[in-house]
Length: 393
Image (cartoon, rainbow, N blue to C red):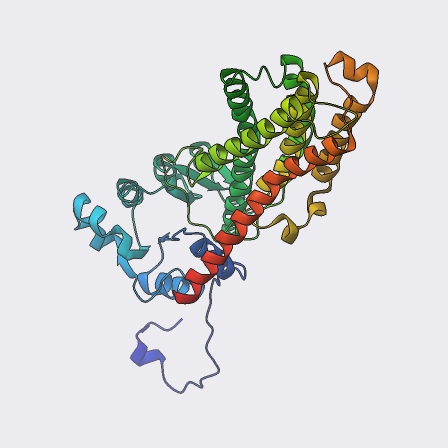
């Protein structure tokens, strides 16, 4: 070995053969995942131990660092007060060469701004930030046991795209819960209104307890199970996140439930009144029993038709009745069961039902599908308005 290892002594009479560089490229799906997250109203922030130039280049390549965003180092962050960080945290998309304490400060700054924070990490030094975040997501392959124990969930493939996919699945599950609540409460509230109004007006009870139980089991219960298998709406990742403290009835769900409850109440009372007081058929005249049977059929069938309203914000004719086959066939089964309970005399007698004429059946069917038609008109008006807003935006 030469004794003099200086560049002047060694670097002479050399021939340039080439240059070798190394890169840790982002995963191919990262850019798509960041784009989908942004579209869903989720801001992606990079916190790394890499040099700020390297981190900024990667972040810019996959769409995290945009023109309006800034990068900051741990040394610069240390000079900031927590109040200043909370005020400017939205401006920064890349944090380079940061300490474990810095990560906690960043998480807390976002939380002070009212945001729900998910933190990812794999090392022991990430554990405090994973614990401080609303949702800590540890890496399942490279993650340490300490980080996994501190986290709320473990990403088994260490892939950011998996987190975005999990958000999509979570939104779908949450929306299906809201759909089920919309479906069940609309009918249940209407049952209270129907009984209260009819008795107050002196018309008598439109339905009895055993009929209400039957409606809840057959018309609501059987199709309702299949709402959990409803596919995600095509725009589920285009919607902004719900606010942190939003209730289950947020974003207009409460209004929808109330509106449909009123619609159910009106159509059922119309059918009950006609069956109870109006002669629309020469063979089967108006009576309390006919009115009760009409109310039972209309309330049950309208509940079944309502399940097609709650499936999506899009028109049922656009997404298709058979796009959820279990739900469609269970709804048809419920309608057939209700029909058979009226036309089979022994069963009808058990539930205080009487035969109906063809005129009564046609009227009952028309009133039963009215809630479906009503909501379809609402959806058409809403979608036309949204398209108009997008056109002029």
